[in-house]
Image 1 (cartoon, rainbow, N blue to C red):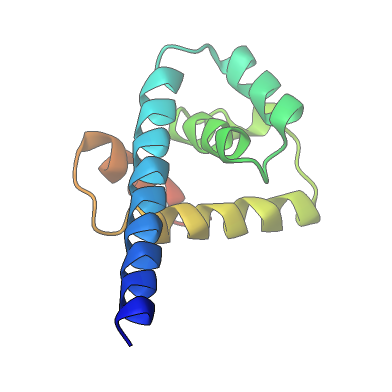
Image 2 (cartoon, one colour; image 1 turned 60 degrees about the vertical axis):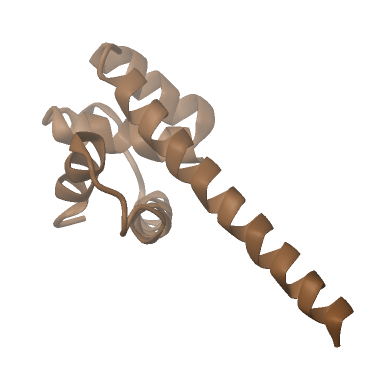
Length: 110
């Protein structure tokens, strides 16, 4: 039984590390996007696609700036935004800070 306990502990530790890395990536991307122009954010949405973490955060940043209409999304793409935003929301649910508060606030009403 000791082997399986060790294996379960290693898997749990790896999962926690992956989640921490995702949280750090989300925070860094959000802060980096503060410096980008509206047109560059729109380009990121188009280049990466809204189902990509960076593309979705770029769309949310456009939404925060009130410029989400600079990117035209069909209903399928909007559903991808909602799905990715839901994943991001679950990932950062226990995180605090200005960036996380802004992300949560921007997600309201998607």
